[in-house]
Amino acid sequence: MTLPETGEFYWSKIRRQIELEDRRSPSINAPEPVSARWVRFVTPAGALAALALFVVVALKHSEPPEPRLALDDSHEIETPLEETSSFSFRSEAAAMTVVWVDSHRE
Image (cartoon, rainbow, N blue to C red):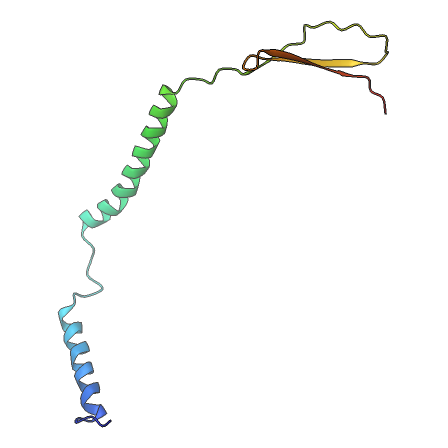
């Protein structure tokens, strides 16, 4: 397939278009308006402030969780073994008390 025009024709057309765009575009060294700088600063700062406010409000309105596990060491255990220890806790959710007795045997 042969083109009716030469390759130089197409490249010169591309070069002319680039030069035209360069003349139309504003200068890169043009100073940025003050309002644009403020918008770039205020937008993220405002989003961060809104997020912080949301977290504070959410934490203030949240109720503390009810204790589901009440530790209790007031149980007395009688054992003939020496060197024993015990640990007990009461689960209100399960309505039960568990006592762990350890005899320290290997």
